[in-house]
Image 1: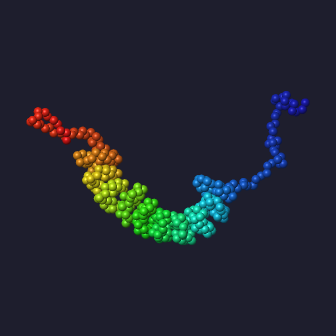
Image 2: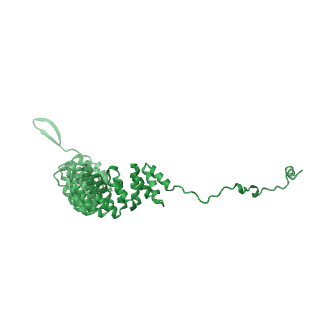
Image 3: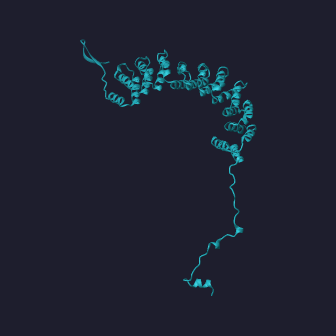
Length: 386
């Protein structure tokens, strides 16, 4: 009987567990060691992702990878810019702008001044992002290109390039067609130079609604008190968008705009008075309360008085509450719509004082005036409600 048989038949026999050597894999079977992991997402892979990107999110992700790439991807993007795939050329133009490589300027200029390729907007934008004196000088020259599309693309892009672009944009605002003018006005607002104010005030009277809108917005960004009267006149513009933009611009200017708006409260046109009252309410400056109270008490048109009441509600000062409460106590002189506007204004203010006035008003019982007349020829009495 061998030793293994003894172990099987004798449970008390000593058992020796296997050692690690029993499980050691022979050297011939060991896998080959890898010294380093292969690179994932190399330049070729990133460019393929960039080419395939169709949504803005995917494009943004691929662009960020390109910007972080240690390789020079400018030649690859230039090849795509000059290719026949229009969408890929547009994406490449924008990417070249973000890379800010002067190497790309000649190709971007060629693309920008060729309106037949329809990528002048992207190429001009890329030049503005590069932003060196050479690129800015080229964009300024493009304002005199024979194509209005190229001029407009340059005007739009120059808003990123600061004061050196202000004077050429003012010139474009005065001489170019409306497409260029609206982009020039927008860019002048971005730059914020006071030298653009006279040209922008002139543009407020342009026949194009879009030009007036951009000029109004630009003046609101510049915030010059000299523009208050011209902007106040735009509060009655035939386009509601221009009216709203003018109101916002006057709010941006602040206190220096008050004299022009207060003067509009005495305008012969009731609509002008109404718009002025609403704008003063939006500005929420307490100094105008007496002027709004004058309108609330004496204007001939109830809807203008309603707007004055709402404006006082937006201002919400102690003086505004006092005068609104006075209107509730003077019901004989108040139109029902005006009273409703006064109550709404007090609710908007919602201070303890305003709440007390509203509670007191809700408890009032209005008894109509009456008179009793007796006629000697007729024994009957009758009551006449006044």
